[in-house]
Image (cartoon, rainbow, N blue to C red; front, top):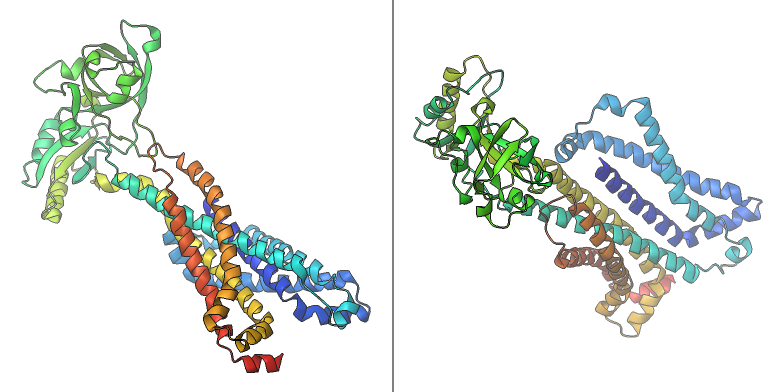
Length: 514
């Protein structure tokens, strides 16, 4: 919601800058009107009120148009953002009042400078035709164009980096196998503590189910933490550790390798009572350098069990990549098993899932059947970031379009103001390409300045966003270069159209009109 609000504000800001830019650029067209009004007795305040009223009228018209468009595209927006829009809330007095308030603020803020600027003209100078926009007005317009494209560039760089981070997280090696794993949560009071091996065997009767395991949770879902102390050592050896209760086949099914010691073995009775396995991060937390140092050490766990470490397994991301890998301890505890994981083959998957459902109804006839594929469930953790990516992509496109509309209007106005100059240059032998280059150079310089401003600001903001991820990409300069080239090409095409149109105009006609 914060991101949507910020992006919306930035787009409104670009549109407001467009309004200021074009209004001040066309001030000469209304100079005589202002001069005549002042001569017949109009003071400055009524003129300011007139220009602000015109802006408010346009803003209100835009609000009405926007409401109609939003009603039409509401399903697409809900799909894009994942936010359901309640029409009853939209027509509530509070929401309508907020919209009217925002419309009023935008209309006034966008018009206040042009109103002050236009109302300041001196009637004598205007009526004599001596009005000049001067360097000050030209500088202001350039500053506003730079601001517009700086915002557009920042949004585009943000879009590129969001998608890169998402792809990085999805392609990252998680340290375990999540493909082709179907998980069956055991809910509704159903228990598998006494016959979980039989239940696994029933599912494995199908040829497409190659393995089965039981656990208290699965990677990507919530895990609890307890205090774990190293018995026989100093008090400062205690650690707060996440824990995961598993059966003897869990490590095998998820293809989690060991770096020292051994895995849980159902043929060793004590493994179900007082054996622990820890990950590599826990090894470092306790201060051991080599994995072999941990084997045989005694632990006292906060969940009511004392035992020894029999093995150290490789780190894996049991939570999303947004969270760092923290110390994790595993123990066999059949009383806590409430998830069944099945390794399935993708061949004839519908028939396999039909078998799983039928078998579930035989084993748990009074409990609801539900399942999920682990890779899909794990990727759901990135749903919010995917929404951010989609939102940035759409609204960045809108922001660039709005900025280019302003640039197009300004280029049109500039070409009209320089009609006589263009005609003289063509008479003296300037080619169409020379004219296009002449008119386009000033605007492309502004885009280059916007790039120089947007790059460091974007770099800081993106690094701030990436701090939310324990595993993250490095901010590559190629993203800024790609964004800069794209915006430069779009701006150049926008300006070149009007420049080419002016360059191809018959110089005789333009000089005659002048």
